[in-house]
Length: 185
Image (cartoon, rainbow, N blue to C red; front, top):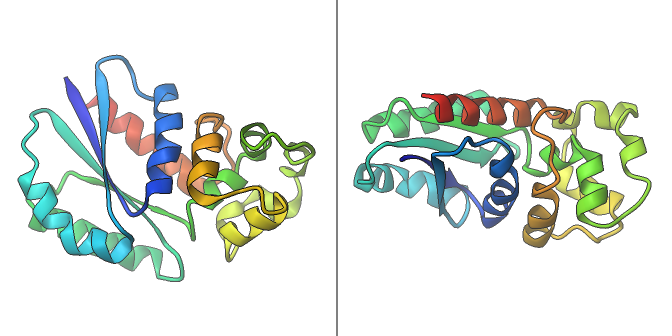
């Protein structure tokens, strides 16, 4: 059985993926998660964890936030680490600014997941048409939800409502495409 192994910077990414993946993965593909304690821990331990992975028929996705860094430099550094681990075919995805950009790209999912009203109608406003361009999506999401959103529990609640096909976040769409591609290999 094929396994997609996710190397993640934080627990909230895992919670989001647990809700999203059943909508994307075909039967016969399972997922596993290695969650690190932030981006530095991820980068420090990625090579050893990848080299040590022994489950056959495994493919890998590394995912982390861009935060204030340069997306291209971050991706190149992560790809280099994957090559050092002899896993050059790993898919590397960087969430533009923060994971919360994914949620701001699907305000209907935020509304449903957090049991709020009136958010979905904001999706077509200028601010939320391209959520990857927002400077601090987590602060925007907290403001928008009036403090209801909490990183881990919010990711768990929102993740199961995310639409894999109609999200406004470009980096989310690229992540979904990468997952689908690996599932089909």
